[in-house]
Image (cartoon, rainbow, N blue to C red; front, side, top):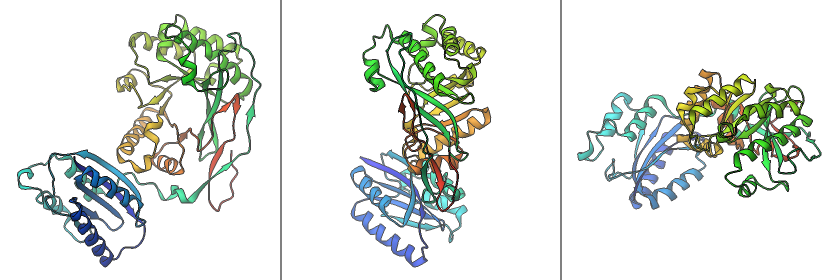
Length: 410
């Protein structure tokens, strides 16, 4: 199947004109032997390449490019399928943007196209090309947040509590994971993650709950989370609890019940954030919206959890403004390599800044992910890179420290 793949990368070392010619010649010959066509743009520090060929040829070629030490920050911008080749029998044509008239270059590249497809001013590939020629690469990490400049260091601190049997009985327990602001060394809040009484996964726990009892169980279990949090948190700390949207509008008096659970746990409403799970379809939107208004009136915070993973609705954001949006891990994994995800996250950063909403990146496990997200404007993070969930307590927290600098952490 004919595939079009576009990537950008950063030059990792100096590249003379002769080096560039040799690189171009070798790549062109290799591409021709594989029946891969395309173009390569270079602006002095960055490469931009369009590859076209059969998927089984393009994929290993791109993996080889990613492993080439002459490139760093290789970011895939587009991978799609096509009915035709745009660049004919060209193995690869190099354009050094430092030596050409960039204003005329887009038309020159467009006219390399096969004759029957020349009149394509709205072709997505050519829009990518034009953007790179005019503006350079997309969403680069800043020099202050290169992964090689940072290490993770522990604060050597944790908290543990002894589980107690609640009024609801021993129906579940919770693991706690911090949401951190790495640069300031501040813990924003803790999320209570449900586990079975034996500490097993949420999937195993919910598999044992009937669909008829799910929402009632969901609400009752939060009493245990809040009781544990009340015995563990300091007065200036917050706890996030997850709820299915249906739990709010299907169980009568749900918000009043939550308020009472908060009071019995000796917590203040402003210490509690309800994370509405975005992975469940909201059927009764008007009733759900009414519940959100009741939550606001009770002084409790609201977040959208797992944003981007399921039934994401921009219309939902237009009807109520959450205090916090948590980006699902699926959007975060290898964000430093994926231009499509980068564009989405950059747009969310701008939206949240404009609307005064806190944006949290969930599931961060690599320094490279954190560095890119920190560079683009994300300030709050949750994930194994910083701390793992800890059953009945708070585990060790790791903070980024610039290599070669002494710094107090945590």
